[in-house]
Image (cartoon, rainbow, N blue to C red; front, side, top):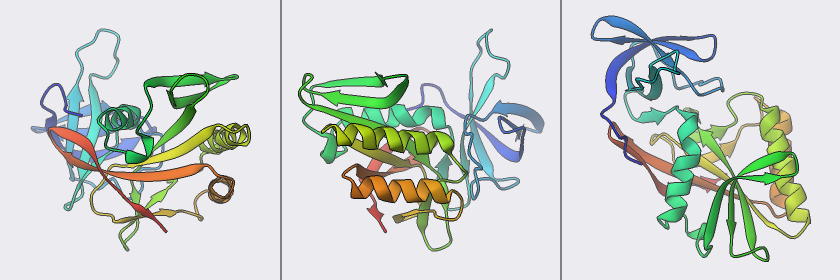
Length: 230
């Protein structure tokens, strides 16, 4: 996924009230919207290089969006509003072999009172529901981890995938890793023990779990390769 316009360079200063980040751009502090609702642990360091996008829309209170940050080793994609688009682009470009062979792709597919991120299908008789999550947390052993905060919404999505699987419908939990300084995926049991328990449970019941890592630079983010789950 290429950015339509060049991103604006700055230095990260602080994040506050969850959705706000102060970034120094050419000596001036600008406030950027932060779409990521997680803890962003291991992603934020004072004076780390940051990249912002600018949106001159009359409906926006904040004109800047916080897109990426550089920890000295890798750019980290922190704008979670892009994650589904990255997954859809990767599926359409054939970069995720496990999800090839479907004619139709529908984002935000409704199931009951809820929605699953992606529905792949070849008519009603062959369907595959895909839930997508962004991964940015890492440890010092080179593992990326999920989640980085307690996620009741994430727990709900796992239960929904399991219910669909029990009806004989293919379901996939797809993790998109937006950093390049990791080599394996690990379920974090300490931050949200219930999510960890549920993820292991749905995997044993037949819900497929895929982890794909992105390559990132200031001009684009693309899904690059599959990571092993440990």
